Image (cartoon, rainbow, N blue to C red; front, side, top):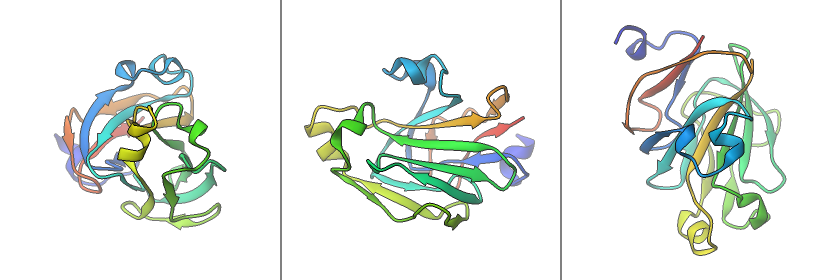
Length: 157
């Protein structure tokens, strides 16, 4: 397993605890076809979402369903909670960070009411994509049941 357990640069850690799935399994064409970038999805167990990397928050979306982060290694990532949850206009989302905040791997970024999201008719799967560099390669760790802050999901190459 080599680098997956030693915390080397460009490692992206689990941002919530739950079951992982590849993006092509997500029921949203923009994500499943990789139009927004490469990445991974997790079906969260508890609705708590943590920074997968050390970096800076570049944007908390006005509808609070997504957070952008620039990693200290220079990659731009977006953590997106749910499918079409932008339509909730912030209902059920509680960000704990703001634009420009420095974050460390494992810092709590936001909490989401997964039951409310699902009661409103939306899929609550969470998605993490690397938006820059768009042509990067990801080396997946293969973990299928992940623990936030502990398990490496992939390495950006």
